[in-house]
Length: 203
Image 1 (tube, helix red, strand yellow):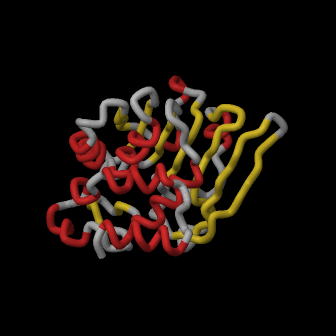
Image 2 (cartoon, rainbow, N blue to C red):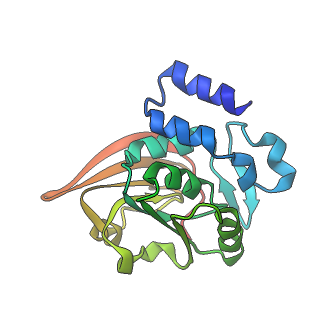
């Protein structure tokens, strides 16, 4: 499958309605964020290994999560699970020059890979740390995205989110997770299900 055919499929199926997400996907080269041996499969709609028991998520999963985040130019965003840096690159485009993206990766080798891949994305900061803890010193965030499976909704991540901020996170069993969009309200949270997905566990 090619980039153009994926874009056409999402538009025709009405799966992705956010033109900003489609534009970001069209501008960022997925092949620059995967190991060389898999580059010919860059636009296959399935996950690819990036080593260290980690994957780059399938394109459809990526854009569904980004659409749910409803990112605005200038947003400050926290990503937990940098992987190869691909999602952070898309977040960078969506947040714009006045936005900031902080992406955390626990595995040192993947952190180095992501950092190298993201050199030209000047509004992205890569951090080698335990993403489960979030990034309190830079909080509160407008948006938080978690790209690995969590056993529940981490309370400390909600604490690091602004009122009206959005958290997108896969939760529950590591065999199959429910993707949740969580909006923080003054009186609590609003939860929406985006369907069932499969992610590697949050380390």
